Length: 386
Image (tube, rainbow, N blue to C red):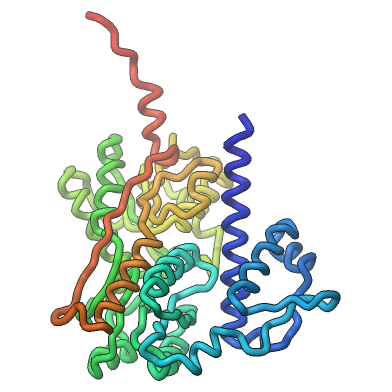
């Protein structure tokens, strides 16, 4: 009976290990942790992340193997005076460097994308130099200009809530190779690798309709509106399923302008689940929004899935470990990164020529308890002979 708990703990520790490695790596490469500086002790890092010192020791060992840190007996752990990432950027020919600009250092999908990209490009003899835009257009433009000088091509995670981007448009105008990942820009035809967001939105909504729900809502936050193509395509899949299953749509089913994870506001989620006209089921644009609804339901006495069914999108590591395990649409983050890296190198090496390539990876509906399917199975009468 303790095996699921042990597996859950192991997954949590693995996620925290990955987060520590990612955050320290980003701080070193950005220059926030300067060369030669001493980093916090294992004990201090363990306290900050609420993990064991063993997990911290593994993370520091990984960064030491990468050449970003060095340990001096009796003195502590320091940022290497000449970190290989900076040496690579300065000394390797630009044609063997790949630039990657993702959105957030701590985001789970971003970490999976980076892992996939690294696997693809290192197998072809390329090095990765990466940065994070943090949803800031000035940072994105600055990093594009900087990396363009030292790389043969770029993989870019476009900013949210826009249909075009001047810095990315300029790359196409000058013929500099680049691939967009996770979402594309509606007003710019370019190479991209994305999930089947429309198909995923359709399957999530179809599942709720098959379970008998008639009023199915769609929820998204201010972090990504309809100009963000991943949001818009999930919305299009949602609308298509409503139409095909003859489910009504009205504006009250669209739950918009919800708080973001950067600016959480529990009161707004609480007010939404308390609404007398709330939908009986909600397809949320991502797992974070789904999580906030689950927490709001717990605070307000709304039962999930008995009173409100929820389906998310992403299948993040915590989805199956929530108080009510989350039904969600899984996307292939590592595969997306690998495809993007492969496509970019094929462009650089002239193995792919001509029109823009659009790669769409399949998604998968993962059914757990938050949608109510299990309740229906348990409440179905046993088959009895006539």
